[in-house]
Image (cartoon, rainbow, N blue to C red; front, top):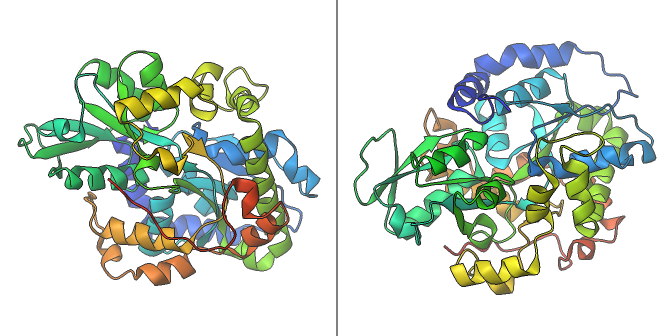
Length: 394
């Protein structure tokens, strides 16, 4: 895995891409592409557990079972590559960080919609072994994968709740400040080992890798701060939703079926995603992926004792899967993004109404049908009703 993945260079490329002018050539390229009714599913993904449902749907033949063809998913090395490939139409189904979806639609007017959640939770704050509380991070540096990420949002909520101020580009942060830096996830573990950072917050399996190598410990799981929060979401082009509604429905059906299967087959999923799996979807070992997807019961006991998990009654999985995009989540995300430190031009957020974004960014009509056809919300351990109240407890 190269240094493009989640790197500062990637951020610069994506920042340039996600402007009206930067996106325009790629949007024109997409519009110029002929749209065949039987065009195959072309998945673009990054090699992290966030991509699980898309990869499981491909591996298990769920697209074909729905009557549509699917090409082998395209592994991309950076968010910039992934977003560029999607905007230009080289791939037509992707998973992206939920804040990136907000950024793409409202900063550069990318005509894409969230049609489902890809997974919930699946991230953590991992720190050096001598860090025992969030307050211990004062005066230190913490790595984040991206400014537009749920990781950055949750981390900053944690910091502020503990009297700390997030800053960037400071060599010597004050005792009440925490310096945030962009770092590629594969570089986070060695950086923590070298003590150039005090911690990092990122998607799995990089937290599990830090634990397995004895480099650091999980200080807090993000799902224990924001209950059942989305991380990555599934994006489709608006043109496909309006002009190929049946095709779009079949894609969402396959993703929902994949999530149902994954929840019931976690060990098998780890094997399927691993570097030893038939498709070699990711470069990760089965052991590391199992620690995320199918952790031992003793892990829960240890995390409760350490404080990595505070809310035992939430019954959060380290990573879980449910596809319905609750409107309350999108509203809350936009509200939090407005007060989150983000480098670059974030002026588009100032005028963005959270309630409008929840209706405009998301099309839940396809996933509602798919969920109801696959056992309803109960199949995902959720109560009936497509509404909920967001719970954030730092």
